[in-house]
Length: 118
Image 1 (tube, one colour):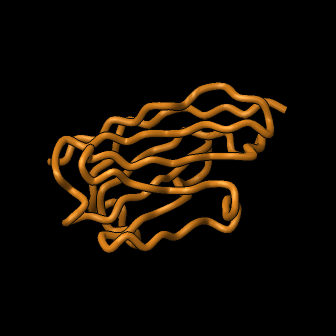
Image 2: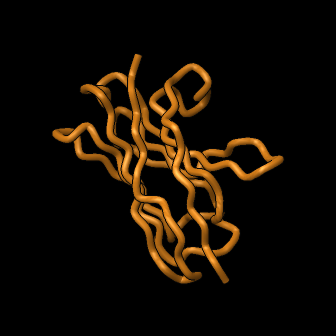
C-alpha cells in the first residue's frame, strides 16, 4: 500500500500562491500516475491536475494557466504550484497515486486544507 503525505496548505489572500507537496513512501512514479484532487462540502472530489507515468500533464479548465503539477522522482514527491489563487479554489486538496481515470483504484493522502480569502 502506497503511503502519501500532503503538506503546504494554508490560508492565503486572493492573488497569492501556495505550493502543495505530496511525499510518497516509495518509488511509485514508474508504476503510477499521480493526481491532485480537491473537494468542497457537498461536492464530489474533482481532478485538478494529473501527471502520467510518462510525464504528460493534464489540468482542469478552471486552473489552466494558474496551477502547475510537477514531480521529483529522486524525492518521490509530486508538487502542485498554485498561482493567482481565487476564493473558489478553497477546498481540501488530496494527492492520489493511481489511474487518473479511476482514482478510486489508487491510494489517497489525508488531504490538506487550502483557504483563499477575498
